[in-house]
Length: 87
Image (cartoon, rainbow, N blue to C red; front, side, top):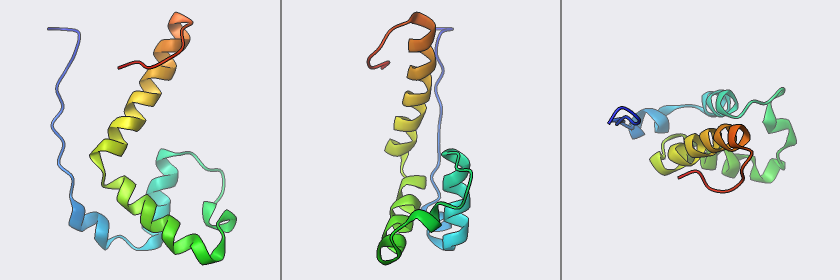
């Protein structure tokens, strides 16, 4: 079919685990545009926990697909003047 494609992904868990906190924040803020470093808005006692969560999300295929789906759904729904799930 010409209306879809298949994508093969490889997740390098060890690479993601090796990133320092600055690299995790940099990559996460590239995906979710932030004007400033989001760490200054984190509760100090919970910052490490939040960064661990971001690290896990950056290496999670399900999270990736959720983000792809949301972006496509927003555009498609805006074009069709529709709301709801896309896939």
